[in-house]
Amino acid sequence: MAAMFRKTLCMILAAGMILVSAAGCGKGTAEQDAAAPAPSDGTTAEMALEEASPAGAEEKTEEAAEPVIIPVREINKHGNLMLDTTFEEMNAAGIEVGDLITVLVGDREYVLPVGTSYTDVDSGEMICRFDQEDKEVALSINYGSFAAETGAAEKQTIEEDPGYRWDSKVTEVRISLKEKGGYLDAYMARNLTRTDAREDYPDLTDEEFANFRPVSVKGMKADILYRSSTPIEPAIGRNEYAMAAMEKAGIRTVINLDDSVETMKSYGTFPGSYYSGCAIVNPEMSYDFAGAEFGEKIRDSILFMNENEGPCLVHCKEGKDRTGILCAVLECFAGAPAEDVDRDYMITYENYYGVKEEDTAYRIILENNLHKTLCGLFGIEEMEGADLQEKAEQYLLSIGLTREDLEALRERLVSE
Image 1 (cartoon, rainbow, N blue to C red):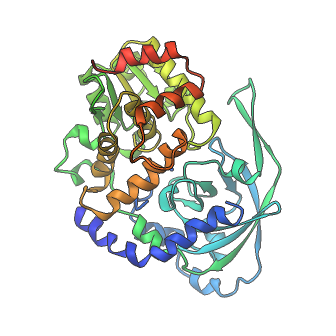
Image 2: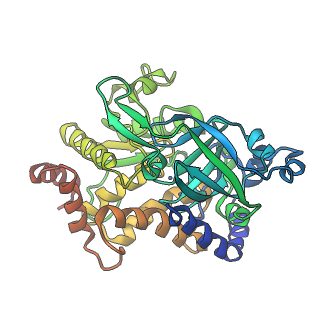
Image 3: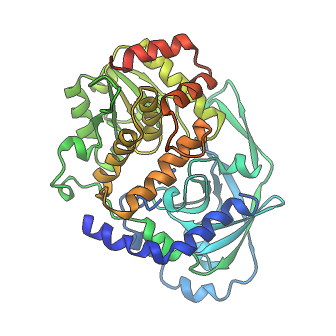
């Protein structure tokens, strides 16, 4: 796995100009993890390309000259525009994974790469995503809301389930091919091999395979805050290991950033489990880290943590993006130095993808996923030289926590 990772990295320099071009054009024309992970179901980049670009699509490509008009089927909770089309129909229009496309949303035009995962682009950038898990085509932003950013819809809070409503301003988008294969090298460089089979990770402990660990940084009390992949959803094949690890650690409180209460209870792994006996909160956190709602979810999570007995486990699906950012904010609040925050964040990438500190992508992932997001939250230009503890406290106050709340959090998490 590490050997394949290093082989893939050599493509990054060759793809550099494409990365700069495509990252800029996403937001530059009117616009969740970075040389980063493979599609979330564990497929390789080659497998994703083959599945999203079936045989015969290349012959059809030359016939497509006019833009295609595609209805927006729905806007999901993360603000993705879910398009009423299929991979095959997109291929027939000459559009495949690795291409650059022009997308007209209302009267705004954007240039997007076509990929398979949020993290095929940098944090905050747009992508047309051929979702390999759900077999859907979506217009998305890595760590953001496409609908809100483009003005395609406004999100309203309502009392009825699911607690929100998107008021749409567009019912369709117009898509045309801008450059065939214009993002292909960058796409391949960003997709590394990961599987969900335990036997493929013989050098990892069960806890490492589950991406389960205590948050162990300077300033944080030992064995009080843990992070993990999901202990209940079987999708990525790690839940039983995560469940065993949380029981062994004596977890009493859980912050489930991924599932609604209804979804959580629908898993066959939930009823009667150790997990079900814990105090649980379900903030249903989105990937729009720059949005006001993200801050509200952090606030609610911290208030719940303050009110319930530890140790506390934070998880989403993989324990990588939403979990990683929430834990990083708490680490900064506890006074952890930047190098500790970096190291804890990157353990996840080592567990899933074999990324090592000496690898070129290590710094790329940090800068484009963790640093860019924290700088945005804390209102700073760069991590280096910043008083991260002070900035974290200011941020937590800005999202509605009181100084009394922060004192309670400090008493719970921060070592003497």
